[in-house]
Length: 413
Length: 166
Image 1 (cartoon, rainbow over the protein chains, first blue to last red):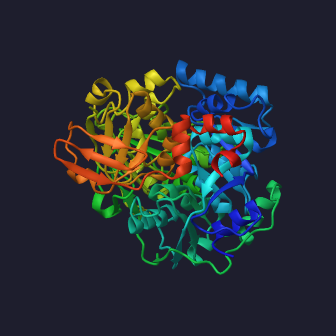
Image 2: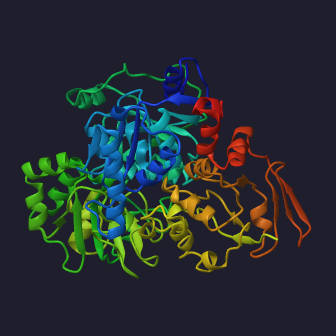
Image 3: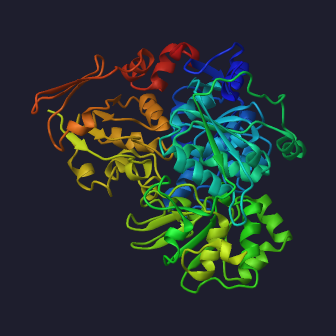
């Protein structure tokens, strides 16, 4: 009985639990990547020689992939050595961890997952309780298959209304961050619901769940439905019957109608500084980046390709498109999107996190300004601390690339 | 006596350890770049036992444990903030970095002034201003983790996670 989060924890620990309880729960999957694995290995090695279950650990090289420097190559070396020694079954080098985990069917409705990355909450899009933790928790989980949790209270976010042309899932989540504030979901689970969300494909739902952490939430859950099961079916690993909230008690219910929502832009210095695109239109850009675990999926690349077809990106604006995974890259190739984007003058990079964390493939120097489809626009995240990051949908990004300034996609529809 | 390093609201993990320096597990290197852009005086001036006083939502952003590890590696004694982001709070406890929530301290605290923190009782004193604050001490399991020098040590002592936390 309870919210989706309470239902999942109750099933995992084998007794009814409520928000506020401290539990130690068995995990279905532990995920880590090239930045967080080495520190987790240090914690693990203090405890055990062998991991709890090599089939339920997933390790992805994505953050600086391929390595851009000697220290980053060394992080990969430590990670590969651990993977080999422990016989980790799920080792991937084909895109951003969160995209790959969902694509490979490693997250499923009702699963309990921790990951050494704050955007692990992305798997809530397929009904998993998934949350980011630090490397010590990850190392402990490699060793024991368990983690401690305080069962969170839940905020239900109901989104209704038909999105106008030119507005997308990214605009919905930016509107939610604006409504709740960057700390509004701290320590809470979010249940995203309502007709707008249930009409979205899994890819768009991932954009919402991915950004739950941007307002502090521990998880961003979407109840599994026919869309979820149709997506996961061929991926073949769904193991548990989906769960639904049962007589839930929500801490708060937030209702949002997006029938008239226009394109939004999160401005520096944090994701809560959300403005309508009109307010920042015309700001010159040095870089446009379309990609990441937030918006590097086929749906996103399709939107960008449609807007850029037959056009040219501005000469003085670097335009970078990075598909989130090999699967997406191949689908984008087959659909002709890669050709369209490259003919428009965008460079299409190898799947991975790309410039999102400021280490390679589009790092910003002093005074540069970027518009990206990322989830985070903190000061200095993409490079020099005086550079600026604006975040928006792939549509805003694509038309801004054409003009070399922040632009409104509705003028192109 | 420990001194205060006062920071603002929403101090995120990229500010605590910028991404391009977060390419190592070497504690000395993390300490050297801790807050190096927001407060270049911090990594060179912090003394053992000093206290960072933050505003709302301290440590928001990435799950990188390198952020509390970097703060700990500078020799910092404690972080006191109006509120903390979830993953940072949890990571700090797990690695044994003392951390307290005190909604009132931030308004009153002055950069560089002396501070005394008693973790077990939750007493915070600003002797130069003659001010005292009482905060809720850490829960017993968190204190046990701090006392053991981190959750890894506690699990080592007690055998398994259920036993350590339960």
